[in-house]
Image (cartoon, rainbow over all chains, first blue to last red; front, side, top):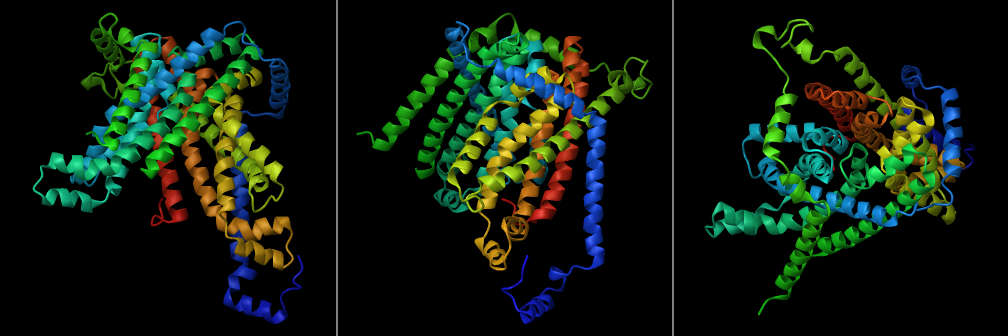
Length: 280
Length: 279
């Protein structure tokens, strides 16, 4: 790197303005170096602990190559109607999961919003419990619900709702807290009841935001719903898993391609709707 | 006279109810929900999920029925599986992050002047984001064998998909001033990235990476269900042997694990980007 553009005087001035910028002290350089070495050492330890080896990786890549070559040409295996039905079921599960999740999340969100429930303790406990349950993936819920409710979409729908409700509740609560207080104040000043304040002061502000958040969750759920079939909770996942187990990769790629088209269509439609909501 | 706004709302309501009714029909929701005696089934299920704890024996050893140790009878093993899950999440996030930084420098408009490369990379990231991680994990577990390697590769791929978009956007949002400054001083492409862009975007990228670590950890908890390593395998085993109280025990370990990592990562993130300018 040449320094033709800067004269010696310029460099001296810069060094005076930021003494550590051009020439950091040795101690700082050491800390950075030691940090890198430590980080790398820990990472290598993690890799060893997981038992990852190049040997296994090489063999896997080779096998994966064979899977890929078996993918062409894609084939529907003569079961197109069944695949389409499964995709429809997947969408239905995603829609109902989102709907039930939202139904549960609205009261939870109201209770979890600082501006609605002034009690700091309730607020803190609710928000923390949202955080706790937020992390549990739908598949984990589905696995146990299958045992309770039997095979089929019902377990999948409830699993999606259980995954979504705490996440939506958190978002809904934040939306409420971000709402403009003045509109609520205005309704309240007319002597309206607290229910009317919610209906006319708060709802018009949060409803479009909530609706667009729900659409976002619908997009997400269509992706989550595709895997629930693996444990028997309905949808396209079952068809996929069955074909992967028997190494019918030409049919797997066919389903994946149709599925990707459906995802793109849903995302597009949902994005258009969200844009309309944003401008409304 | 009905206003246009009201008519519009009514129209959307009809569409919504139509889709709702269709969904209930297709998924046979009502049929499944009312089959047999659902309340009795759920009651029996919750009964079997509740651990059998006796107050006088709570802290006895694992051979005494009614103790915590009896409930968490394989606690050491589950803890080891939980640690493996955390390790998978960390390794997957790091690999994904390193690969993404390289690819995103080629996908950002301000660093890659050649359009077609950017287009191909952006479509590539989108494709990675569309394939659900569990499906990926099944295929990879068939190729790489049952165990954490399939899980790590799955998480790496999922991470590249999401970072591809986030990192590219972060890089494109970088101020051109410092980059121009480095170029004016005679710095090449790497010097421009290292001294012009990196100092601006690095805190944000690390914050994204930590956020992604939380997401990857939750995903990793489920990967074991399809044989891709981590604690999911213990969930699967508990279900296979219909030990529902064991399922609850493993679930509690998962929750504790996720909470620990979330709180650590949150604390680091707030220090990095300052609590004040939280989104």
